Length: 150
Figure (cartoon, rainbow, N blue to C red):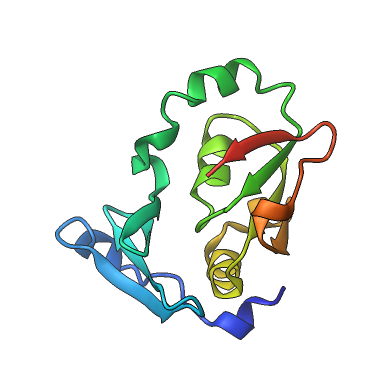
């Protein structure tokens, strides 16, 4: 999937300090299901707001804090990760910070969101990520995949 189809620029340097004062809107879209999707830079990190809920928020996305200790103990065994509903890619970035160097199958139903993620993801992580435009509800994990529900 090519990022240029869903053009988004990485934040400018001056937007990072501003993001600690207020959230900086980077992109917005209305999806086919008529849900509004907004991407912010907030506290120096990407925050995805979709249908009124926060789905990705860098290391400020607290939903995975209880999961990290278990994953860290297993880090040497984790080679492939299946992400169903990948958001803006916060989870792979956070796993990398925890020393988990895996290949990712990143399943997301929204093509535009995949484009945003491709445009913003770090190159070394992007090289190990396969982006799949599909409804995750219909996918089953392949043998040997670690599943993390986002």
